[in-house]
Amino acid sequence: MTQREVDLFVIGGGSGGVRAGRIAAQHGAKVMMAEEYRMGGTCVIRGCVPKKLFVYAGRFAHDIDDMAGFGWRVSAPEFDWLTLVANKDKEIARLEGIYKRNAEAAGVEIVASRAVVAGPNRVRILETGEEVAARHILLATGAHPALGPQIPGCELAITSNEAFNLPRFPDRILIQGAGYIAVEFAGLFRALGAEVTLVYRGDKVLRGFDMEVREHLEAEMTRAGIKLVSGKTLTSIEAISGGKRVVLSDGSELEVDEVMLAIGRIPSTRNLGLEAVGVALDELGAVVVDAHSRTSVPSIYAVGDITNRINLTPVAIREGHAFADTVFGNKPWTVDHSLVATAVFSEPEIGTVGCTEEAARAAGRPVDIYKTSFRPLKATLSGRETRSFMKLIVDGETDQVLGVHIMGEAAGEMIQLAAVAMGLKATKADFDRTIAVHPTAAEELVTLRTKAS
Image (cartoon, rainbow, N blue to C red; front, side):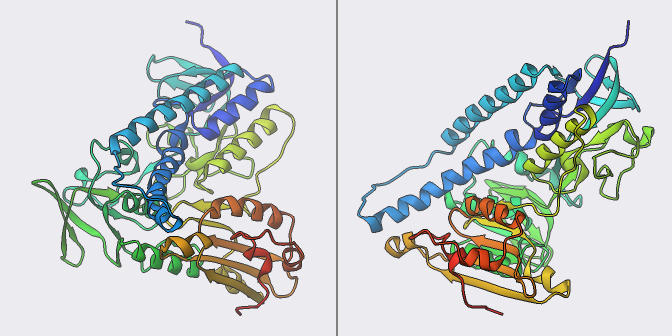
């Protein structure tokens, strides 16, 4: 059999891989892509998109509570978990179809199979055993949930992968973790009516975020009725009648319906054949790449979560685009990872871009801090106890805004535009001379005048 040859073989049909394949094909490259599960990857199938849909579901519960203060009377609303799951599945299937059609329309040949690297310029398709010669190989297999230590009963726990398709709603759930995924699921399950316990080994949630944001979120989670258990871990899980019994590291026990592990994600590099061809991996198993996403093997590249640079879908998409333009479009460029905005869809929502106060001070530069905490206008009539928080980190010498941190409704929407301003190196004076839009929460960003420190 004659071995097929392509210009690019992409392993992984997620956001980064699909963007790279599409752009490369548009530049005239012959592209083949292998995806062993479903097109769209983590974000579309079991990550950002279904998570945001579930967050919306939880927010409707808040809206129903808020309506009474505005004169509405809603009698006995009911929530049906299986309806949410079924409608989510329909939307995910629709998006998956779009990803597949767009790639194929660009000229990408898609293979529904796991594929592994068989050499610097060879890929083996496991479904058929066929080996394909490739001038370039792109690794875009993403990451998967970490399971942590093999404690007794760990097989009884779920991860974010399974949480979107539970056969019944868990009235009591324990979540272990303190990062994006843990706090988001804690908030959405609580909003949907579950009793939620969040267990984490550190002293605060969201390690790496601004300390005041972390403290504010913990206060809001506690106010919402989420039980926070810091400084502890799970030591065992046992199946019992009607649920699971969990033992924590201090010996205490809890009985819940579900246990969810949200303790991080691991780059999906195992059994891809990378070590055999000399692709360098770091201590976590992530693929080591240079600024152009090239690995230690010149013909092999990697983008997205498999590289463990900044594990966000828009970053993977940008990396995939830069790779394709550089290698196939004769338009070399690299992704700037230094200023990336992000949102955490916790309750309340968080948007952040730039450095934290702690990082700015650790750098030894003079820093001015502007911040405010206030009750949102909607809450004044609804009576709901919640507070928004905003904070600007400003260089004390140049007046340049170094960090923006927002917590409250639409924080993710606001931070996107704040990132544009920071990308243009906006100063505090630039913010100050911008006329406020009233009444909004966002106006606080341009009306802060008094230094907190």
